[in-house]
Length: 143
Image 1 (cartoon, rainbow, N blue to C red):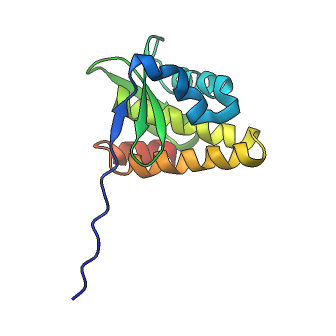
Image 2: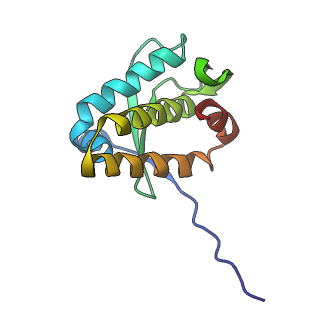
């Protein structure tokens, strides 16, 4: 009987204030200003409950990254017109959704190695999202 290796859980680590400047280029490459703007724009588009504010940056143990608004335990009503998703998500899960939409859009705008990096970031975040406590809702929101 052969034993299948158990995959390691992907963990998210909050980026400390002193390292926030490195986060955006690590996530979005040379498109870091556009990427950040897209995440905020997607959140405004996806949730009328979102009204701006401070965002947390997270790095993932698989090399991925995402952003999430600082909203404590508040939940956001999220509506995705393109696939009829409607649900209440934690700020963390909503941030993952907004980050995935931004990465997806940016992959269509980027070229060459930058595009490859963004595609890799997208799939690393999807991999993490499958283990998130709200994975079902995240999946429905992005499908």
